[in-house]
Structures are given as C-alpha cells and as structure tokens.
Length: 454
Image (cartoon, rainbow, N blue to C red):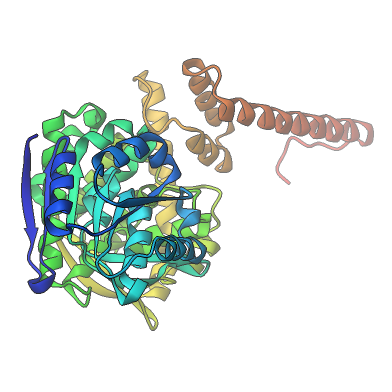
C-alpha cells in the first residue's frame, strides 16, 4: 500500500487525511489504534453497499460493527433519512465512545456527519468518500446537513471528522456521469485557488476520462490541499471560506428549481460556474479570456451548461434561498484571475435581473458550438446530447435538433431517451403538418394569401 498524508490543523479538532490505493488496512489499523473496544456504526447507501458491502464487513473483521444503508440520491437528503440514522444508532446502543463511519458519496457524508454531530450531542465520525465529488469537496471541512423543500443544506452543523481516507481506486466503479460531476468541484478548486491545477485541467480537458492513477492522485490531492488550507483559515465560514461557494449561488438555485435529484450536484455547480463567470465578466471583474477559457474547459469536459426545461422565474426565485443569503444581497465569490478569487456583496435584484442575458449567452455559445462542429465535420462533440437537442428545439432550430438526435442514434441505436425524443417530436411534426394543410385548404377556399407577412 502506497499512501501519503495531509493534516488539517484546527487545534483540538486537527485531523489527518490519508491518500493512497487499497488503504483498507490503514483504515482498520487506525480504528483499532484510536477506538479499541468501541463499536463502529457504518452509514452508507444502497448503491455503495451493493458494491462494497462485503468488503466493509471484511475490513472490520474482529471489530464490533453495524451497517446501515440509506436510499441513494439527493432526494433522500432529508429529515426522514436522518431520523433513520438516529434509530440505527439508538438500536445499536451507540454511546459517546462509538465511531460513525460515513462510507459513500457526499450525501452519505453530509447525512452521517450531521447525525454524528447531533446524536448524544456529538459522537466522533470519520469519512471514507467513494465519489470524486466527495473526495475533493464534501469529505473535508466538517460541513454536514440536509435539505429542506425551501432550499439546499438549510439545516446543518459544523462537525469535523476525526480522519478522512481517500482512495482514488474507488473511482473505477463510478459511471461517467458521476465522475464528470466530481470534475466540477475540481475545476472550482483550480479556478478559485490553485493556478497550477487550473492549467493542468485546461491542458487535459479532452482526455480527462483517460487520466492515469498517478494523475488522479495528484488532482485529488491538490484539490483537497486547497480546500484544507481555506478551512484552516476560516473553519466556520465567516469570511474567506465562502470562496469555496464559487459556482454555488446560481448552482444551488438551478438544483433547487429543477427538483432535487434531476441534476447531480456537480452538474449544477458546472452550470453555476459558467453562469456566474458571465455575470462577473459583465460586472467588469472577471477577465473575458478567463471566462471564455472556463466555458471551453467545461464544454470539453462534457458538461451541458443549461437545463432548457427550467423557467427563469423558478431559477430567479431560488437564487439566494440557501444558507448564503443575507438580507437583500449575497456574498459571491468572483474570479479575478485563474487561482485568484475575491468575495463581493452583490444585490440579489441585480443578479436576478442579469439572468436572462446570462442564459441567452450560454445558449448562443452552445448553438454556435454545435453548428461549428457539424459544419466542419469534426468528431462528435460532448455537447451533442438530448439536452442540447432540447435547447435547439426551444430556440426554433428544429432541423438542427433532429440532426443531433439522429447522430446520437447513429452511435447508440438503442438509446431509449433519443428514441422517445424522436417519437414525440415526430408526432409534433405531424400536428404541424396537419395544421398547415388545414390552413392551406381554408386559404385556398376563401382566397387568402398566407405567403406574405401578417
């Protein structure tokens, strides 16, 4: 086993973060050393348990332990799930010498961490993050909580873990969508505070799925090191730690407006990064070349930067409806250069007013990217997705939308979403043709000329 370590220095709450491959023996050794004779309560989700359930039990052989699997997904990040964890702890007779293990993605970490923070007024816990997003973001820093219908993470507590075990080999079991979602938080870290990481990402955007184990290790470690350094300066998010919310002001609004679970958190953050960069460029703060480079990076990584089914009114209503709001304005992180970020208080009214122009620019660029790649005969681009077809359709580019769907089906003939899209939109075509024929017949009968302007 090869591993290295990074320490988050927070006085009495100082803890170590271990990086490596196959760190299970270290995980077991750490528990035996620091919690001898105590019981271990593992909280995971059903998806992770289906893959690693037997491994968890094997790693904890000889250690009294219990395992509780919650429902997966953002829609399960609620009070009812937290109550289920409380019941799990109580029925297992967990006391203050017990250790909670959050074994899973960011949602598991947030829920298990909050339960640990509040059960018996606080019991210790450790993080074993299994997704890229949780490894580079949510497992470090001690922010725990759950969502309310009114907003994301409105209930929470700061509760630092006693240790974090990050093994990049967990990423091998992630599907492409979840792996990409984690890349949004990596991009955020590079843009907000690590120029070297930013340049590495820009240089490797088109091959991010083919990164070597060593490259993944380095990217994850740099992201975590940046976040840990910020947390050491501002543990409770009273000032500088708010720069970690880059992309989240609009990202959280998109996530809430879509309905929790439709967009992955990282997908919403990627959109938020793009939208907020346009906003700050329009304010004259973010350099245009930085904003444009971010757009290219996100596109090459495969992110779709708009969700066409979301009404702007819903997004505007959700903006500011989370833990970052303060009266009528919001403290927004704004990029001044790659690796450099400042906090600026922005009136919510101004941000909401700018949303139509921001979305229009996002859609214009998306349309230009699709048209340009098709005219040049370049290979399939990441933006040729069903969502992109919806964007083109909504903007009147119906033939372009059909071409996108046809291209998807040429690569994936059994793609159910694409087949359903084509079926439903073919019916729409039939209705349009029937209406046109009907109006043509009426015009001919009564002598109207429908060819000119009306």
